[in-house]
Length: 415
Image (cartoon, rainbow, N blue to C red; front, top):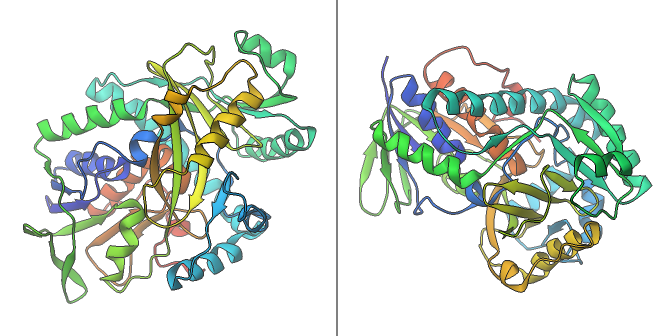
């Protein structure tokens, strides 16, 4: 049965939700507080990454975070602040940095990432989109024996999960990337991964949805929600009241602000990431993560992107030049011949990724609101999981059996 659905949030998850809801013949309106042409969905590394099987909340991460707290150039920077929500999130994050959390998450992360990767291909073929979509794999480039041993350990877990992955010596690395000079010990190559140029997909998807009758309400910030009998009746912006049968909360790092109005305690922190683009021919053809520095490098259509850092410092788009320099310095350290220019660094962009305490997304209905489906909290993997999340959202709202078991993603899970 066709329903009126409002999707709050026009990022990758919101657009993919609108796409699959439209395919199920629902009438969809997307409401977004921005112009829908910037943010995390546009400046991310573009990875489709089944390889990313370990959640952010893993053993030792909180210890590193505390160590790095006084180093604003560190890969993970948690800025301390006196705020009840932040303190509760920090407590839950610390509790989630456990072997148990990793073990319960691995298969679920792998499955939703594979589903997302394959859906990108299906969407491109079905809609005849032209966005860049390649399957060259992902290199985990290591400078130290210690890090290489750690990446090999993770690779063994990935192999047990059925993912194609192999270790490469420095000589083997040079054979597949002959036009790059490395300062590294070796690498691990995940052959299962793909990559895209995010803005190309976003623009094609928006154009398709608009042409298909999906309504976009841009620069409309939802500031109030009317509830009756545990159901949303309407949402209000400054200019208008919107009514629907079903609602999707896909507002990224802003989702918990709205969830509070429903009495739902959705623990989220904004994790800022930065990206620098270079239009020069740098010789890099395979997506690469600089393992120690946690910097992602992607050969996109017309440019190479250098992205990285996880900065937990509240909701803001302030550019921290120290963190920008950290990305540039790491790049030069691994690739001695590559030095990002002052102009390239000045053109840096940032985006906010919604981070849950256990590093797992929130996907599904909360017991506190019958006609709300939550889809947020994907941390660094929103781009990779976006299409899969959108399809799962459409299955929930269409009263179909979901393609994946969503227990580990349940919005009401305890920490």
